[in-house]
Image (cartoon, rainbow, N blue to C red):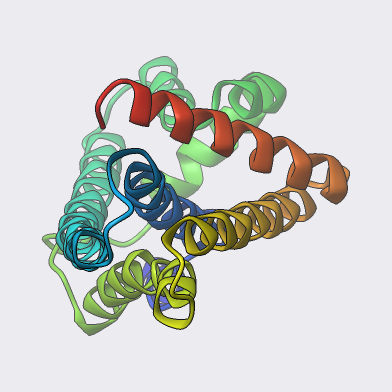
Length: 219
């Protein structure tokens, strides 16, 4: 049962993971393009900054991919520890507390004592879990994280490749970035079951303000 769940989860990042990585890449790239508009109008310096933006997102894409793999190992180790504890003969109240701690607080509260006890019994009867290790699907997920962070940079770079005027390229790039933030907010809001347009506008405005703050703080 657990191996099937892992195979379904690992190859494809869930919507929150996918959109969050895109947002992270966008914020990084838009910080660089915003810095360009502040520090230079020179074409050569502009190219240097754009190369730096791509290099930064490559580096952070690698870091995020590594953190994804670390998170997978930690989650599996935690699950293995939970199952081992439940199979180790702990009393009912202690087992229920362990199960409740592994669940989101509201879900644990809604489950109540009966629900937690049912989960405890089912988990205690589950097959033993092997030592956590990374598989091919996990590395595919890490590759997906890397590509999302890196590829989110390219739509913002295109205006600098097509336009000769630096300030115009910066404005077009920022509009593209804000538009992508709106789409990201729309997708997350639909996934959460709230009004998509509200989430889109909220993320676009919040992201823009965050970029201004990052630049002002020297980021």
